[in-house]
Image (cartoon, rainbow, N blue to C red):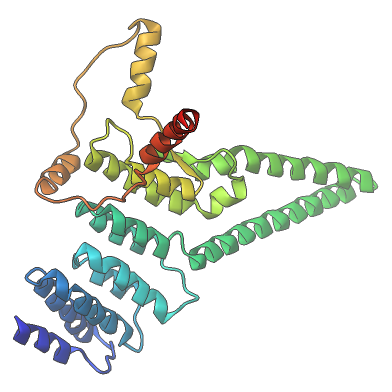
Length: 324
């Protein structure tokens, strides 16, 4: 075992230049060797192996995101996913890791029932400051296009007025600008936030504005995937675990009531009218995943369960004071 670990250390290249497919294949095989070795390693060796893959990511002069995605598709152990993403981000601190790359890592972490590291993956991708800046740039470009379109509309009106030899007035321009401006603004308020926050299992806190919802839309989407896996793993009657609920609250998100719970409430309120009980559809992917995690120990977020002690202490204190 020690000889293999020593060989891994020695195999780390001092400088890698990925100039062709052969170099890239050789580079990817270096990761595969580490990932394969990890399956036989002990927990004590994990830190050393994390440093090994970090060195591999940082070594090449140029490393495209498409090549990095191929590394993630080699199915590294879930505890290595966050260090890999952090190392790739370190190569260019101004570059945002794309949603597609983040989803590859997230799906693999959830496949391995690792909720804790899945949250770290979100923080390194769609919840990173670089990603927020990218979304702000995207928003600004959208607003700029709208403004240019607005100016084009005014110009078109001016041309039409001149063709029919009508004298253009400031009042007409003002009326058109006000109408289009109000239409765009209220349309954004009405639909922008809703479309950005339309996911399953969780939703934004009502206090979160439409602008924030747009910038953090992908973060919400990724957490909805985490919530879906957490519900299956925690066996909490369709509700997310306490640890994930606390994590959602920190991010101004909140879990939705399970659909089965809402249907049950509606069933009792309506007396069973217009209800027909049927067997639920079975998704083959869900069946495979449930079989895969049968013998795994889920790595869930730990919630604050000391609230019961605080409650008991709070109840006991008045009684003690009166007795005294």
